[in-house]
Image 1: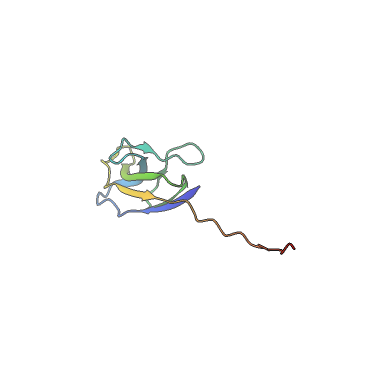
Image 2: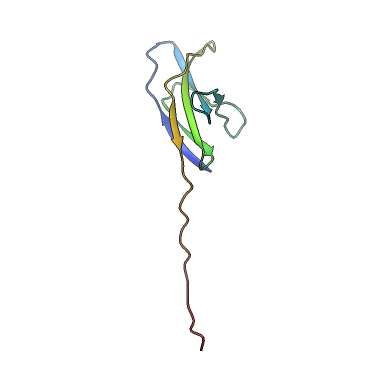
Length: 102
């Protein structure tokens, strides 16, 4: 599984207390909450980055961020960004030996 770090600029609203990351495998959504290993959506405090783990290789992810208030009100989505992580290139075999047979 792959990982990626998502960063964003702070909302200019002074009453924002956190952010939520949503994803889709389809451009433009519909978006789902990114789910952490504990099974809960990634809802963050007042931070401006998040490393997302558990991403599948060879899959397009479309991500948006929303701002949250202390009462749970959620903003409209940010601009959408796309990430595609190709399969890693395997290491070559080692210890290759050829023996002549006569």
